[in-house]
Length: 83
Image 1 (spheres, rainbow, N blue to C red):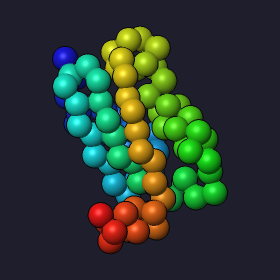
Image 2: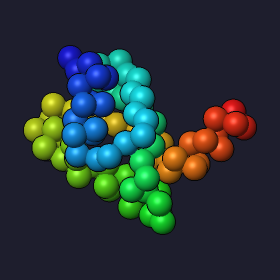
Image 3: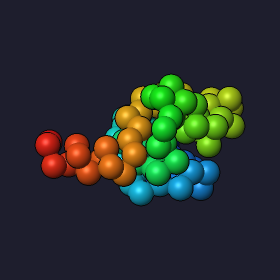
């Protein structure tokens, strides 16, 4: 069973992140990922960028499902201010 910290480590190793938080039950996970690399990217492109960092884990079946919210640092700050 996967630990959310493992997923944070995998993503952080392949993407410069300002913030990563992952919750899950060991099989299905939800992530908030904040990276300056997302600036100017569509939501789909952002998710594709994250998937590149964990492609081998998804392909092997080690990681089954990851839903994600991808934000720039500015969007994250705005979200924190507005709740």
